[in-house]
Image (cartoon, rainbow, N blue to C red; front, side, top):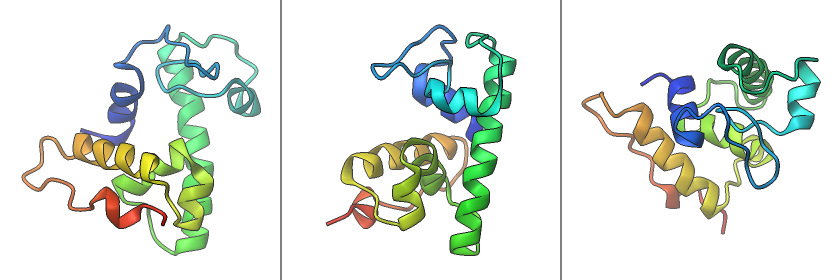
Length: 126
């Protein structure tokens, strides 16, 4: 499964109406302040707008990760970039984020013959 599809499935089960506990919006669960930083649209339930917002935010975070790490993020790190970017940038990923990142990586690799080999405990901050 591609990462964006996996992210939507993982965050909300592709539910465009979902609103998170911290006010996250859209199928990708974007904080309103982050949403507003890339678009003036208030059409949070439109999957096409949500996709463009998410792609822009992920592009920014991925570029920063590549500057720091000199490589592309793994599926595990990609989810950490979405859920806890500061942790992904520093490489000190909490146990909670690591567990979610591991499940996300497995979802991305669901149709592949190889299941994601990174264990959450390898990335958990002490």
